[in-house]
Image (tube, rainbow, N blue to C red):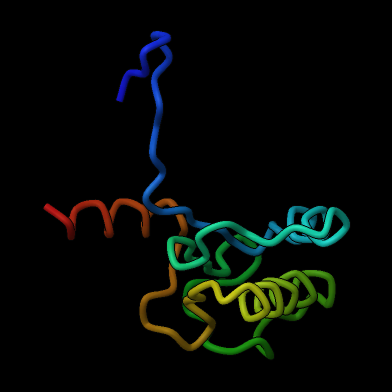
Amino acid sequence: MTRDDGQDLLFIDRHFIHDVTTQSFDMLRERGLKPRSPERIFGTADHYVSSTANDLASVADPERRGMITALQRDAAQSRITLFDMDDSRRGIVHVLKMRYALAER
């Protein structure tokens, strides 16, 4: 949509987050803010876990496990839909974007 001043206004209908978002949620908490439109945000652990892993115990590195646990906590606190470790919808976030875009056609 183009505004009267010539600037374009974009609407983001869906936002995907992953297991490397802890700092963003920490920053929101520090500023006393919450994610806007949590019903449009979807999360999945994809950077630090194998796509064949179905539980947190399969992530050997404690730091990586901590990032996934933080994603689970932040999603729950913010009422964000999380495609968690045992969820069949879980996968690589960039592939999920395409899957959901194509499903709407």
